[in-house]
Length: 86
Image 1 (cartoon, rainbow, N blue to C red):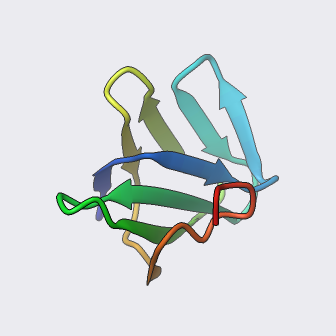
Image 2: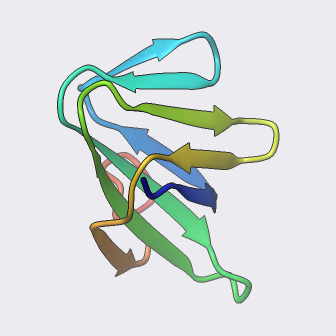
C-alpha cells in the first residue's frame, strides 16, 4: 500500500472523519482530505486525497507532518481550501 507524508501548512478534513485523541483521524466513509504545503520558494500548493472507509490518517501537530494511506489524486497551485486564505 502507498503512503504519503507531507509537511503541511493547513489540513482540511471533510465531514467523513472521526477524531480519536489528538493525532488519529479515521475515515468513517469514503473521505477527502485537503493538504496545503509551502514549497522552498514560499509558493503554496494544494493536494487532494481520497481515503477509503476505515483508513487512518496520523497528524503530528508539533512537526506539522501528516501521514496519509494513499496517493494524491489532484494537485493545484495556491491554497484551494474552503476556509483558508484562498
